[in-house]
Length: 471
Image (cartoon, rainbow, N blue to C red; front, side, top):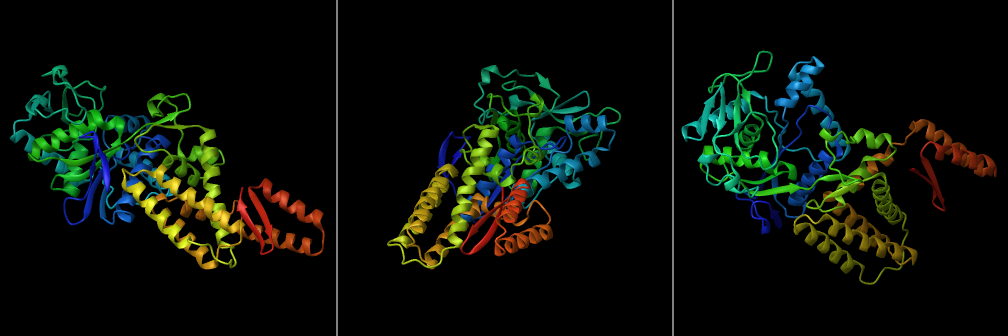
């Protein structure tokens, strides 16, 4: 398995450092609002990495994704809403889990909240360790990291040390790209803000310390194997995570850094809450699209390339997924052809191609190419009536094996299994149509077909009977 490592700016061979278990941390949502599909591009890419590590490379995975539930934004928004911080952030954690399930994300082994008592204590302990090693100073009740004490600072973002402003500091949890300054570790809190006193004085954690402490608490000791996130987190967040973790422990923080490119709007703007141009999973579903099509779109472009979102690309994703499902459906209806010469060898080659593409830096578009190449050949064999039932079953097993990583067919099947109208009503209408056709009342049969289509259900008649599909 090879992965691109942002730290070295090149692909490298990857194996976990111990016990064949990948220790992987991914920065999760800051839960002050519902996540948008730009956020979920990163989470889906991490899910693909997780699945590839498990199902292709054969490793076990210990995967942590956090919830940032205390920072400037969560505090400000909870105050505006007049809701206690823990209650306010809990509603968006629930929303994230709902959206993650809709997109078929495998649940991580750990989903810590920054305000969990054990995590807060780990942050305090890390700050104390940084102080003992001479990396911190206090000012106006807050504790800051002095970046001049760590010569390696800036290695991930490739910062020019000549441009680092020694002694300048910043209190906000996020700041502008390339604005390298001493950053806050533990913030003095004004009245009305949450505060803890766990050994370094009263206050609350800065954003950056949260992930460093949680990653090493749940996956340590360092170095962990992989740290994931969007490219916008490289600086300052991930750079500061490295500084904190390595400054406190004296050992490397993470061996590999896995960063996912932006999702762009059709006009080229990055999708972000600050720009107000966001779509949530709910927004997509309310436009009549399905979560399986959105997942397909999000996996269709390599994670290190920017992805443009539009309703046209959503439609293209729907059509591509429908092609796969149509072939799967046809394979399920194969009776027994004469057999296709070399089909077993063709399946083995397709499986090997699929796995090789994924093993090369999670090249999902390449892996999808292997899927569609075999799909075309399978359709041709069905058209020629050569595919045997045994070969059809083996081909279905190939698609199911691919879907252990892709995760789109299982979503679409679950969606197809739940009709957009009550099941009992659908059963009654299908029975009425069968009876109308038996009585040669084709006008009534066509009326039922049209009525169902207007409600999102398409009927397909064949010699084997009638099946329904979502429109």
